Length: 162
Image 1 (spheres, rainbow, N blue to C red):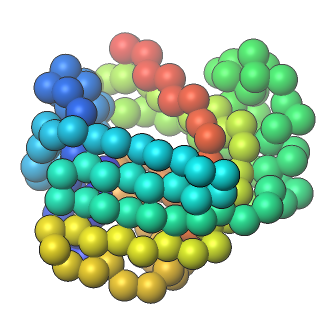
Image 2 (image 1 turned 90 degrees about the vertical axis):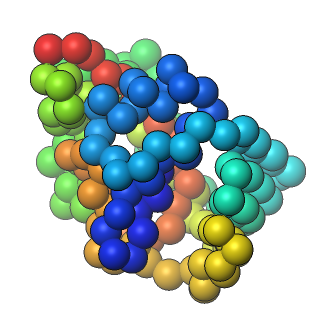
């Protein structure tokens, strides 16, 4: 998911089926189906998706990441738990964990780990994406956004039809 500076929202999806499902859940101006590759070597990550090349390095897990990892995964994915932590998530990180999505769907994000991104470089359509900075303004793909400070967050996203 990419939000361009002018507000245009674009989805880069690895399959038509996934692209269609995500586009029915969120609002996009363009959906492109293309190969997506992710590689990880320790704290170094590389993501390639058609016109996008992104490389980043993660830092050590902080207190919030340790707290997220301490919650047993079966509990972390339960809607009641996710609703319970929605308010603290909004206050601490400016994110939502539970809400409505497109086509009458309910969605929740079970965050299970968090690492700061300490360095990054990227190119989109041949244009350098610039230096690493806070996410401001927040992206607008659905009811939630991303943490303001660049982070790698391990989540389980669940979408349920209304």
